[in-house]
Length: 239
Ligand code: SAM
Image (tube, rainbow, N blue to C red):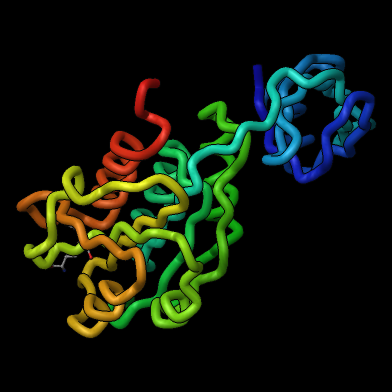
């Protein structure tokens, strides 16, 4: 069954106008027949069965039928990723959605060579990946922020898995401990400056970790770090 993330409230009997993109995707790309069933989720109301109804030549609506799964909170895990090349960033966003990150924050650091990215496109990639995974939300994405700004407003109680390639950090599996909200921080292709490393390590709740003796590309590092976190502290335990 096709699963779609929608931005409308979901309840029995609700009728939702499909966006132009959804109407095109379902009607023209997937060639879904009017009246076919699909699943909808919105990150708040669980997953619902719904009927796809074509309207005119290009429009569509969803008629919500009943709840199939109740909303369940996933891990409260942020991925903070320095801006890297577009293709790598897109891979990171897709994998972060698959690996259960709740939010992706884009950081501008001393060695990032751009302070811009197409956040809407990244959000669309996150949603598409979330639709395929079966998760009940889609990772939130925010406009890029300076690392210093992000660290200055660090939320109390959120721990930080600082992936530090400099070589003196503890092994991630040994260093990770403690329930509650976490964030994973991955640097740009040029790495962090010594000042940035010191500032990150000074964040209350920061844990500097190594991802092994080899320097990994940012996309590999993000996937490895999220995997280790899920295996040690997240929803891979016992599943
Ligand atoms: N230019 C840096 C250098 O050569 O030292 C490498 C930066 S690496 C491509 C990008 C980011 O991935 C790093 O800032 C770090 O967050 C993470 N990373 C890569 N390898 C790592 C490792 N072995 N341990 C911890 N973090 C790592």
